[in-house]
Image (tube, rainbow, N blue to C red; front, side, top):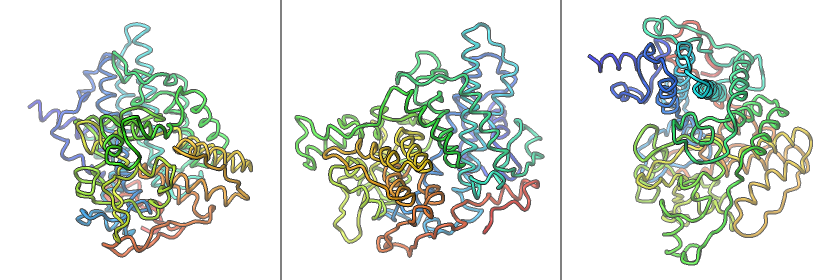
Length: 530
């Protein structure tokens, strides 16, 4: 009986409408998630924060969005271990029944619903003292910051034009429907501005409570309350969300303000590319060097350590992926068993993206590519090693959501819009310099706005590869920059391929069909072209 009660609770807490898809969640229905309990049993601050940890952080999952972005754009080419997975997306066959599109929608609304439940049950929790009140306030602030992030994710993929406040946004999930209310809940899409006002309110609330992260050490108490862990929302996260949000909506002044706030207040810097060797490693590219460099437990290079989860590096916020536990194994999207040519490689790096980071003196030449690759073969075997795994888990890495390099790029775009091309070039070169293990990159000189944006887009393509940016970056910047999607059309040996033209309606995802059919208020609100 208890199992049935918990199952019913899980279903009632995660389904949002009668038609909403719950892709990749079915297998979890019989699993008791940490923090799940009857709402009327949550009466203490400790129970509230446990619910936050188990029912919000544990379910936050942008990996499907990142993967869809990589497959649709020019970041990937089919690998030798592929069984045809997502070839339809790679060929731009995008429709309202697509599993990954539906999972972006459903996962973000799942987390939003959990946040709404937290805000509801918090009304019945009475902190016992001042310390508990502080903990309580931080828990609600974290929840609202995460809700703002989820709405930003939804707007990013499903709004046709984020710079147009009158364009259709997504639906606002009001309250926390449970039980029979779920099946009668119906809500239309509303304007971008209406969603933006709510995002701003959540971020302002969280910003007024959460402090900046000043240490990487986890709390000895409840880590969900610790402002200095990169795995939990702090003011760093809030302002990083605000910077990206305002960049996408075209408010460059606020994007600049919040990106600068992050850069000025965190106590870490861009991750450097050196040292590239040690006294015992041998020369770069030697067998002994490969063993030391690519070690999942003893890698010595700071940039490589960051991707292998051996240090925080420049990470503002990440989702913790333990060797066993909640969350997707991000490496398995690209390499089934391990990031090597024998690891059942489903996707290689796209050839032109490989060419962009295959630069002498650039740490990414090694950090992104497994040494088992053979770039000299006609088939161009560029094995992805940006997610090398961690000790005890070959395919599981923390999901890096915000990094300082993105803040530099946001500042560069803001400088372009101010007409300060020299400053924009400096921000881009800050990242290139951090990634240089030899030589000094020359700061570019931009003659005009198009040249500036073309270079920003080029560096974002390399540095933020497979992190969920390329799809929206091409939508936002390709026409202004005078560039297009850049697949090497000879590299996809397994399927015919092409490049998606600029301004295609397919740079916005369709509203999932199950949402449209199960939500009468959204009738007639499908995105154009679908």
